[in-house]
Image 1 (cartoon, rainbow, N blue to C red):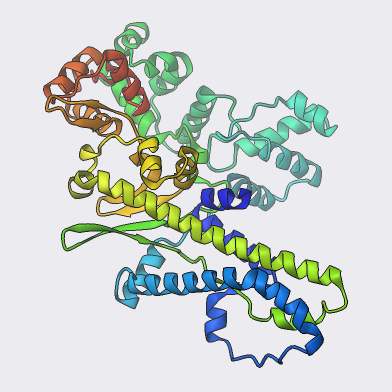
Image 2 (spheres, helix red, strand yellow; image 1 turned 120 degrees about the horizontal axis):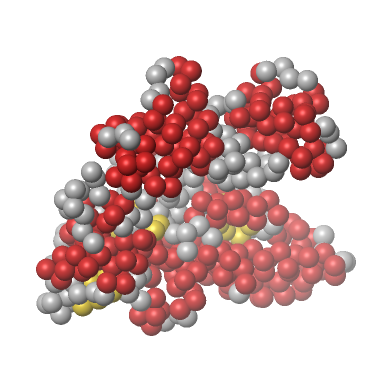
Length: 461
């Protein structure tokens, strides 16, 4: 049961690795295609003294194995008949488009540059420590004194190592904070061309006011015009990068493989399972040969029994995972017809408990089943969790999902007058005009969730 829950929660791409590991560890588990495409194996009849032992094992597992094999064959036929794309070329193109890229991590990128500098070995060792001490935003929290104490080196050597890292690309690495990072980038740009002195002043002395969009206050304190401040502000936004580490991955980029695909066929939406590159599994028929080794050794017999049982339960768990996800997707499709036809603003509220009641599983099973799973719809590929949210009632009495409300709120903010942006009270009024009545605090909550600034910060002078 624990294994079944773990497999249910595993995303499709990770499931492939788990299946491959199980194939290596269990001699009774093999790919279905290996059985179908392999040469026929001549299995010798069991010796008379083997009959009793073999019968015990077969009686215990034969029925379960037959059920699993028949289910595997049915799933294979289903998979073949429901193949998406029709043309082999289309399948290859789709696979190519969704092939994950080989990402490079920021430490790898930085160390590759550092090794090109032919540094002294002692300095390179400290540089490597600095590189791997950077936080997720590529900032350096450790001081030279702390680095020197940690590595038992001199403080000047630690300072030299930090300076080496700060000169590597992308500029802004190993900064102490955002102000330090932007100043590093401005100084670098200044060596290659003209940078207004005002730009550096804004970052050095007025960064907090810039973040709060208090341009008139900055103009009063610096004596610069609003247009000059806006030009420097635009320069910062277009030429400087507050998050240079974002261009580099911690691991290789992962492609998204949907577990289920929703297709419209003759006006009706149908759910089709996707296995990605996860192979079909079956019980190996070669256990008879191994049984011969167990005729005089109870330990070998017990080993065989455990392996057959493990293979049986693993195949059962994989099939159960596929069946559960497909049933959940079917329940979602039956409730989200308008979304599938018309888009995100027609997404209806949906509770996990409602789907759990329909497919007759516990709500925790729903939570596990949709975690990290994706569904391909006519409107695009979505995380399955996106379909589960609360909602509010509009003027026509219909329930509108939180996702649809947020989408409407985002559209209102995008279309507002930027010189006089809407306050949260104004947004409440605009939503009410569209039949959506929610409290001001809810508007504020949704706006922050959408990473939309307050009206004072959205104002353009």
